[in-house]
Every structure is written in structure tokens, then in C-alpha cells.
Image 1 (cartoon, rainbow, N blue to C red):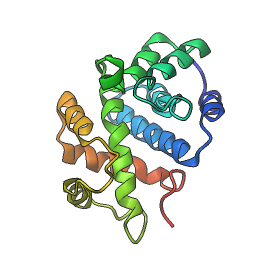
Image 2: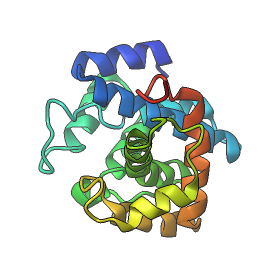
Image 3: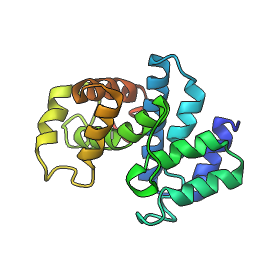
Image 4: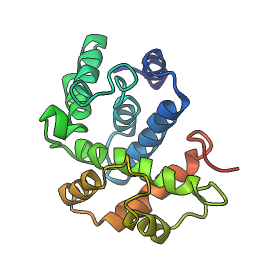
Length: 187
């Protein structure tokens, strides 16, 4: 398996925009947190989170993402189960349904980390340290807010995991707090 440093270098070969790198860091942190909570391999889950959008800057359309990412990871030598997890995070486009716990979390929190980050960015503190679940839920109801976040995916992921959305929000906030600087939040 590749190290985090090798994987990060690979990510940065194909993604140069800060917002994409920050998103990768956010998903990585949340995946590591949920792996730890579930007694799973933090490094593996973290790398899946870090590289899930490896193809996004070069192939941002629904006709190609995440399938091109799967090809890129395969060519680089990542194992097939790793590739499957990345393909499953784009279930609606790849046709690969999330099956493992890792895949179900990735599918769900990819969108959820983006939504939570968007909520934090509009707060006076621009921080996760004082962000509460109720604030995220309030913004959730505002369909004009963070229009690019697919709430249906988060809801479907919540069902797949059998975990209420409120619980996922609360735990994802906790997972992201330690990396808020790396993901562009905080003062």
C-alpha cells in the first residue's frame, strides 16, 4: 500500500486548486475519525478519503467522474478494493453501490463535509470549534444554501449506515475540528 506522503503527492499531481486539496483533507480526516470509531484501519480509510476525487480537476463531468479516478488509481497500483471504494462514492454515476462500511461512510461524508464546511464559512467565527448540529440543520432546510451539495446523497447514506443525519453531522463536526486550519477554517 502507498504511504500518505506518496498518496498526497499523487493527489497534488492531478489537483492544484486549494479548495480541492482542502476538500480531500476534510474527507480524509472524517474517514480516519470514523475508521477509529468503528475499529477499522485508519490509514486505509484516510487514504481512500484523501484520493476519492483524484480525477475531479481533470475530469469533472458526471460522464467521467469517478470512473477516470478508478482508472488512475488502478494504473498507479492501488488495490482493487480501494478502487471499488472510490467508484462507490459516485454510485449514481459509476453504478457501483457502496457495500463495505468504508464505502458507505465515504459515500455519505463526501457531501456532508462540504456542507458542514459551507456552514462554518458563513459564521462570524468561520470556525468549527463553536459550530453545533442545530446550526447545520437550520441551514439544511434552506435549499438555496450550498446548492451544490446533494442532500439526497447524505440522506441515502444515512439510511445505508443506519445512522440518523443529526448523529452524522455531530460526529463529522468533531472529526473536522482538529484539521480546521488545513481545510481553510478558523481564525
